[in-house]
Image (cartoon, helix red, strand yellow):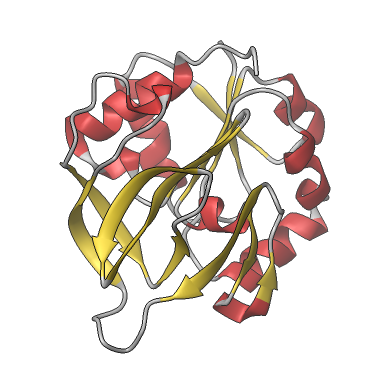
Length: 197
């Protein structure tokens, strides 16, 4: 199986590589469009600021490539947010894969939300053998509200989408690669998804 991690200057790439290796697979880091198109699974990571990340994607043409991919694609954290229509962070237009706008938590709560929180109302093969209310690791100041593509929910000030799914595209606000055994189960489930979407 060819697993590609899109390399566009995002910050959490090493931890994803190590998590995939612990599952017995090898991943390739690349921003080469042909390599990305030829992969069986694509992981779109993200740590950092949205407008800068989108600028990096545009410079390499990945902003137009990613929405056309036909194989399973997993966006993590900022990667998931960039797959939405728009984010308030840097007033950034997203890739439009998930039909929701990303907004900032209000000043009533501490931002970023940093640490462990539960996921529930799980609705996807991504969560096979994952129990309700498992704890996942999160670091974020912006969130995707509940929408028709929500496949997992987390509460912080309000219930919000901690995972999204649209056809072959998946996104997690939490970091599966930093969420222990349960996070590794979610990554394993992603890698075992079949491509018939």
